[in-house]
Amino acid sequence: MCAIDAPTIIRTKRDGGVLSDAAIDWVIAGYTHGRVADEQMSALLMAIFLRGMTPAEIARWTAAMVASGERFDFTDLRRAGKPLALVDKHSTGGVGDKITIPLVPVVLACGGSVPQAAGRGLGHTGGTLDKLEAIPGFTAELSKDRIRQQLCDVGAAIFAAGDLAPADRKIYALRDVTATTESLPLIASSVMSKKLAEGAEALVLDVKVGRGAFLKVESESRELARTMVDLGNAYGVPTRALLTDMDRPLGRTVGNAVEVAESLEVLAGGGPPEVVELTVALAAEMLAAVGIDGVDPAETLRDGSAMDRFRDLVSAQGGDLSQPLPVGACSETVTASRGGVMGDIDAMGVAMAAWRLGAGRAHPGDPVQSGAGVRIHRTPGEPVAAGDPVFTLYTDTAERLPAALAELDDAWCVGDVAPALRPLIIDRIG
Ligand code: URA
Image 1 (cartoon, rainbow, N blue to C red):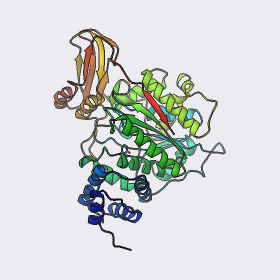
Image 2: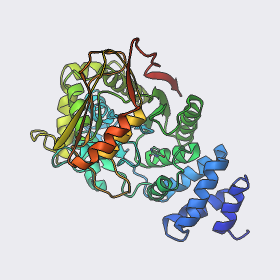
Image 3: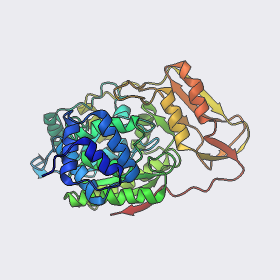
């Protein structure tokens, strides 16, 4: 067998070649254990970004990332004497995407179980863990034994990926600082390596399309969805995907505690209709994927059972919902200078505003402000009068406000007619 070395692997991909299984296994294991340097992996990631990967390369890259760490197996667990219907969902990253927070308890209330490895935000998109950690006392750093116990006791656990797919953790951080995030093979393998390792027996993917998504063009997002669905199925984990709009923010809040507050409204039977619509649609897909039928996920929001399951989950992870959620100490409200109809809102502009306010981080490990974020008072198509509040910005750091306000400058408008909006759920794949 020929010797494998990093420069040869980089050169092969740089020149448009196909990496062998052995080369992929070697480079992922080598990078995980520090034998391949950051600069070498950076160069390889850029070559992959520019040249792409074949389906076989993506499958092998994903398998090598799964093999870089532990793979959980919860099939031996029982609740009330029965095996768990283990199902999870993952979103490819959106703006105002708080769906996991109401979704997990809805699925629980319908009889499903959810082992969810979740991430912290990096770049412009928020992370579920940063949002949940805005709840006083909530922890996502759970040991495997605690995850197993919690799955038996409450049916769900939302935890930091920890030892799952450690290669992805290192590569994801490197992609963020080498402008290689928006790559189909790298997104597909990153998402699926964590999800295939976490122990779910079926998966539902929420693949975002539009200005606030990593992949902006619908045809690319469709291909991403198809690639991930095929990867999951090939691994023996039945996988399906919804393609959903991310041109504008999801719901009326973008940030950390503000998104938890909006999720609590949804769990209390209210909240923005689009957040409810997506929660219910994803729950229906998850339940169908594990063969649970005859239940209406929307009913669990109306009858309070999803809220009860959320309280169980939060308290199992140390959170205290009787404490007030943090709110940034400084705020500023943007008002409309004319009346009319609220026009389109650019998800990326709002995401960048929330990030500048301190809701997100510039480097892995940076702290985030739980109380930072943006509240959207008028959504596209709603009537607006001159002087009406349109956005309120929250932060603990007053000096962050001017840059955040500047991000919003070109992100919205008031017009005379309602903007044409694409449907929230664009398609279903798988
Ligand atoms: N979510 C992930 O886990 N990885 C990506 O690359 C993008 C979104």
